[in-house]
Length: 273
Image (cartoon, rainbow, N blue to C red; front, side, top):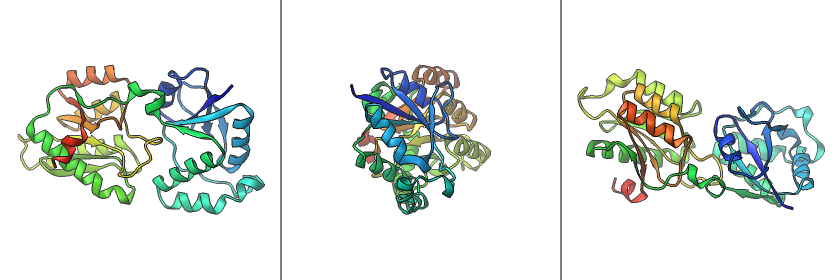
């Protein structure tokens, strides 16, 4: 009988996806174990034996969920078959996150493993277009479109999946440290808004242009709402159908308490910019 394997990273996403699966086999790259979820560790240096083990256990499908940083590789730990992939793996890791992820997906698929997207496994985590709470104003809509335009332009640089814009000005971009660091930076520089009584600003998240949507989708959660409120923003917006929400009900509750809007933006709305 075919089984599905969950390759779990850090954060709350992997447990949320595991809860949607029937008896999954859960694995984690050594050093990146998920919280609150038991996982069998594996090493990238022994990737081929790991893939063999998946087949031995009847696995034909794999889903990736959670945050993983680039691991440090031990040259002496490679088994002979994985060692043949070293140039390919190192080149991908040096080319950026997107290239590294694409290479990982290619290797899994070359070994007859189907990559499943989280939208297939847990569609309720990815909301369709609509305002979940609050009401974005016209200035907020302009800031959202400006942030979306910025992300579209920096996409080829493989930097990140989020931007904070207030009154048309970019206060912060998401880079390797992640969303929390971006919002903390925006909070420190909130006084750069030209009009202190004007639009407070919007966080917008979306996948990078051309990104493989089966892996590394942008993620927002209750802490993102708190961090956006601390940065003085008016709300959070994201590309509908392409961003994961963790604990949607709690996000709505916190947004309502803080007076923020939550908005899954339809592609046509983004295109108006």
